[in-house]
Amino acid sequence: MSFFQWLQESFPPAPKWRPEDAPDLTGKVVIVTGGNAGIGREITKGLLKKNAKVYIATRSEDRAREAIDVLTTETGKKAAFHQLDLSDLAQVRESAQAFAKRESHIDLLYLNAGVMLPPIDALTKQGYDLTVGISLIGHHLFLRLLYPLLLAAPAPDPARIIWVASFAHHHVPGGRLNYATFTDGPERRKTGLFLLYDEAKLAQVTLSVYLANRAKERGERVVSIALHPGNINTEIFRDKKSWLLKLWVRVYPWPTPYGAITPLYAGTAPEAVEHKYLRPWARPGSPNLIALDVTEQDKLWNWLEEQVKDYL
Ligand SMILES: NC(=O)c1ccc[n+]([C@@H]2O[C@H](COP(=O)([O-])OP(=O)(O)OC[C@H]3O[C@@H](n4cnc5c(N)ncnc54)[C@H](OP(=O)(O)O)[C@@H]3O)[C@@H](O)[C@H]2O)c1
Figure (cartoon, rainbow, N blue to C red):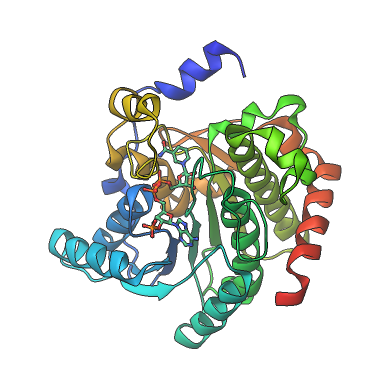
């Protein structure tokens, strides 16, 4: 990505579409992973205002309940909590199975939860890099297990899978995923935290395009859209000690509500189903060309299936 492209992504033109423009969502069942904080919380708020039935799927019940109380005051509508820890594949399976007992279909699945630059020693329960494990592998398993509920979404609208990725997916050198960095070892240790985040996001976008194409080929009423939400002031750096990051989050990002514009457009605007990748604010964009490469998509799908096979 050139400096010019970076500037374009960072300072988009004023939004032409606003969350108020979303249609009424009465009767729609929605899951927002990480819906208790940051961008996810703003997405949840926008959906509640349009009368959707929203489940906040996240790891901390206390943090979720706190957010639900505030959101109820703000919107007059109450979201539900659903336990989900994306850093543990056994719990992800438990979570998906429990959800299938709560609802018979899903209209809209936001795969939003994520971490950025956790300590290099942080791994998931099954030993994957934490960023990749949560954003990619945990979400892949959750989605795989919930796919029948997406297929069961009432006609005529297609069910939508929305991946809150990032323009950071353009930053992977050579554009190729290095699978050796996804588990702990010398390759991962020398890769660095920024690149691990970039790889996780490139993999999300690649998987999203794969799923969109596969659903179309199979004639399924499901769409998958990946997006960059903008550079948003959220809690993503809450544990960081670096003064540089602390300065960065003060001067650079947009206010949190901006972070929900593109995801809400992707999930609710009728015309958004035509797109595979969106950029801020609610505009079509072009993903990294690698994400469109069928060989890379198949390789990623097969790798992911191998990782989650014991939990399906
Ligand atoms: N902020 C930006 O500028 C920006 C830019 C591009 C893309 N994004 C993407 O936007 C998404 C949301 O980020 P954000 O900025 O809103 O960050 P945030 O405020 O830190 O929110 C992250 C959410 O993910 C949840 N989460 C973390 N680990 C989890 C786990 N193991 N299982 C389930 N939920 C988990 C967090 O739960 P807790 O509250 O319990 O920690 C929180 O609800 C991320 O995918 C991020 O990569 C953000």
